[in-house]
Length: 123
Image (cartoon, rainbow, N blue to C red):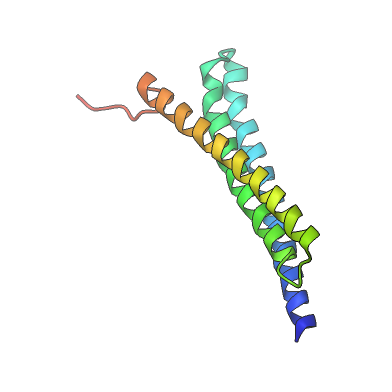
């Protein structure tokens, strides 16, 4: 029974790692695609905020999947070294996610105040 549980935990971990990499790839592609317009128009600067926000959202999701993969890896008979490593990894990823989310909220507020990306109102 323990062997089946190890196999399931391994599959869950691998699936979560795959999803984390997929999120990073999707975010990078989306951000790159959003950068093309301002580069072609020759108007960099504030135009790069939407790509940054798009990438940040996907990176936050990738961090969550990566943490889930680490938890699944240590779900089966962990030793104290595994638990310590998981705690360190979880703390680092949680801090990264916290600061990324804070920056994202700050960027969204700045963008909303500047009226960037706000829907046009009809007169």
